[in-house]
Structure formats: structure tokens, C-alpha cells
Length: 264
Length: 289
Ligand SMILES: Nc1ncnc2c1ncn2[C@@H]1O[C@H](COP(=O)(O)OP(=O)(O)O)[C@@H](O)[C@H]1O
Ligand SMILES: [Mg+2]
Image (cartoon, rainbow over all chains, first blue to last red; front, top):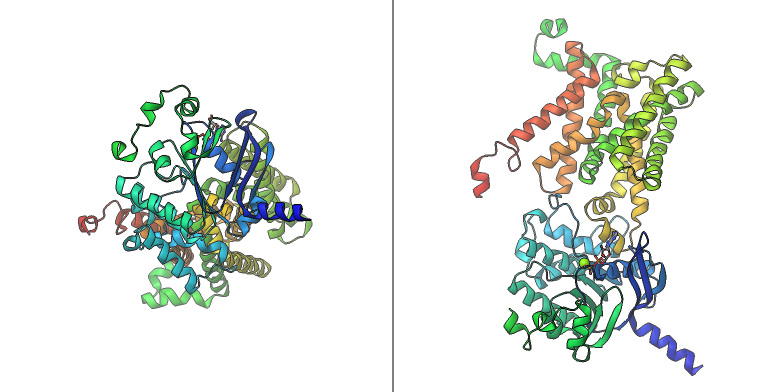
């Protein structure tokens, strides 16, 4: 009795659970035996070189690729159910959108609210408030009326981040959010992520820039087709682990002894 | 031409044709079908489904012939073959390594050829020219009813699902990640395409119906950066060109479907040249502002 209660509690506490997930693309293995358990209120860095399977892991977590093996739960629920509950927001590496689509920044961020709206998707006052608030947090409020295609790459990244914020999901999956953004945006984004963590959200961020991981990730997952190491950042970031992750590259090339100051 | 010259004033150019029953009917049906196809064309152009529109509209041909031969409403046969062609395209694409545009071209020409063969063999009172080129001036009462029902259905579904369909066209990944059933939206949009093609072939015929499904959307796309405004502009430009087309056809005794599409194309050309922001002759001041 006591035991089963305890397990139940544990399941509910876990925001992301992936157990021995394998993904292959037409027989070519991209990811095998990848396991991960994340609680609420943490930032986890997903670190690996190009082609290590970071994006594939995200797609598996979102149910966009079907794992050939393994179990995935978000907030203790199957992925489609969690998605219908607006439990998870996903910002892909490439938005893969047509930038000349006739829609404004405001409307794009409003799309984050669709899942919480009624069938006709008519925004309520609280939806508008969520969008306004999200745009403020990414400092795009002045550009809200601009067509999405007129934004710069970094501004567009912020717009899609705002859409994820507006969704008010408890789990955020961000695939390489820092690529192609300037230092100021980078700072804004990392401060935001820390705020999210303090609000109790769980964030999984993929990156190949180790300075970010040192700066604000509580946990880190090193992957190269499978999880090589997983745990507290300070314990996992050893030269040996990093060498394995980056396929034999000397780690001091990738991570100087001092953190972001020397790199940025 | 004779009637045009003998008419006294522009007002009578507009009003005289309205004294004929068939003209009132043709104008009403053409404007309605134009509006519906115009609205759908926004989704077709934004989703990049122009070729799909061409395919579906040609593929309905055997359906129309079979339906007439069996005495069924033509729209049912057309709808079945329209959706069937799309399903077949999806199936062949999935099961073979042939590229999608090749599969689309292959399937729709196959269906169209089947339609031509059936027309020549069944020898009913189907007028091939009416199917191929449309005949809004000669549209029958039952065809008017079918067209009204189809137009109403497409409009209602588009209005109910407009936000979801827009999101699906813009960012299907996000739609899925917030739990929206994108597979359903995909087939919904394809069904609407089949229905609109059936309605459109009444006015401009199978060969030109694809113009109704892309030109108004393309024109509106050049004129605005807002989706809702694009919808309104597409509906307006499409309905207005249908009305002008029917009038021109009456005055100058020219082929109706051709004249409707020609007017649409001319409106597109005007937008292409003079659109405030995206026209090729846009004034420099709009760049500076
Ligand atoms: N759609 C796909 N089809 C086939 N192979 C793919 C596909 N997507 C990714 N891959 C392969 O899977 C591996 C992992 O890719 P990915 O997850 O994108 O890596 P990362 O995001 O870490 O750079 C790569 O070898 C890549 O070539
Ligand atoms: Mg990637």
C-alpha cells in the first residue's frame, strides 16, 4: 500500500520520462536506449555534436517520429494526451515555416493559445493577456503588428519562443534555441529560462555550446546516438565525458576553463 | 457586339442582360462559386497545393460521366472520384519511390483519360464541351441546386475550421504539438478541394477550374500581409471577375469560362504590376516608409 502510493507520487512528479527509446529512420539507427527522467523545475542541457540525435530525441518526445522501442511519458501521460492538455511546448530547430505567410507576430504568438481556446478559436481576454505578456517577456511587444516575414532571424526565434511561453506549458522542449541569435538575445533567453525554472517548469534545451550548459543547466545529458552520461552538470562535465561525446575532439577546444566571459 | 452597340447607355449595358432568366441565374451561380473558390484558393496557394488542385479537378471527370450515366447527381460522382484520386496519389507516393509531383501528374491524367474514354463510349446526352469548358449560361435548375448546396457546405466548413486550417497551412508541426489532429485537417482540406472543384466546373469547366482555385489567392497574396484581409480580397476579386466574365461573355458572345478566367488573370496582372508593397512597379516611397 505504502509502496504503491510512493510509486504513484513519483510518476506524477516526473515531467519527462523516456525509457530506453530507440529510433531508426528506414533501418538506420539514429538513437538507441536513450533514457531520461526530469522532474519539475529544472533545466536540462542536451549536448552532442551534429548528427548525434538531439533533434531526433525531441521529435520522439513529441511523437513526431515513432520509436521502434521504448516508452515516453510527459507529466505521467502518453504524449498525445499530454499535448491535448497543453502540457508541452516545442520549438523546433528550424521552424520550417513559410516566412512570407500573411500573418503578424501577434497572430503567431496567439497560435500558442489555440489549444486552450474553444472550437472556433476566438481569443478571450485571458488569451490576449497571455500573448501580450509573452511578447513583453521576449521584448517584441513593439513589433507585434509586423508581418512575421519582416523579422530578423533572432527576432523570429524570439517570436516562436513567445508562442511557447503563451502556451503556458509545464514542459518546454527547445531544439538549439541559441543558434543564430546575438549576444543580447542570448542573455535575454537564458535569463528567461532561469525564470521558467523558478516558476517550476521543466526545460530541455539542446545545444552544442558548452558555455550555456555551465551557466544555467542544472542537469546535462551527453548524447551520441545514445545517452553517454546523465546527471548534475558539475559531475558530468568531465574532460573524459566530453571527449567521448564529441568523438575524440580535445575538450579544451570546446570548453575553456573559465566559462562564458572568455567565450562571449 | 451588336447588342452592345445598340444599347444606349452604360446603365442599360448592365441592366439589359438581367432581363433574361438565364443571365440572372448565371450571374448568381458564377459569383457564388467564384466567392467560394476564391476563399479556398487562399489555403491552396499558401499550402502550395496548386498542382493538387489541377489534379483533383481533372480527376473528377470520370465521376461526372458515370454519375450522369447512372442518373445520379453529378456532384456525388465527381466528389467520389476527386477524393479517390487524392487517396490514390497518397497511396502510390507512399508505396513507391516515384516523386510526388510525378505521381500527381500521372494519376490525374490517367483519371482524365478514363473520363474521355467513358464519354465516347457511354454516348448519353452528356455534352463533353459543357464538362470541359463549363456553361453557366445554360445551367439547369437541378445543377443550380447542387451548386448552391456544395457552395454552402464548403463555406460553412471553411468558416468553422478557418483558424485550424490556417495554422495547418502555416505550421503543421505546431498544430500537432498542441494536440490538433492534422491528419483530419489534411483530408478535410482535400475534401473541400474536391467539392470546390465540382462547383467550379459548373462555371468554368474542368480545364480551367484550377484557375479559380489559385488565381484569386495569388492576387490577394500580393495585396496584403494579413490572412483575414487576404480572404476578403480573394473572395471579392474572384466574385467580381466571375460577374465581369459573364457580362463580357454575353456582350461579345465569347466563351464564358474563358472570359471569367481571363478577367481573373488580368486582375492578377494588375496586382503583379501595381500592388503597393509587392508589385514590381511599386513606388520607391513605399520602400522608404
Ligand atoms: N528524416 C530523416 N531521415 C533519415 N535520417 C535522418 C532524418 N533525420 C535525421 N536523420 C539522421 O539521424 C541522425 C541524427 O540526426 P539529428 O537528430 O538531426 O541530429 P542532431 O540534431 O543532433 O544534429 C543523423 O545521422 C541524421 O542524418
Ligand atoms: Mg538538430
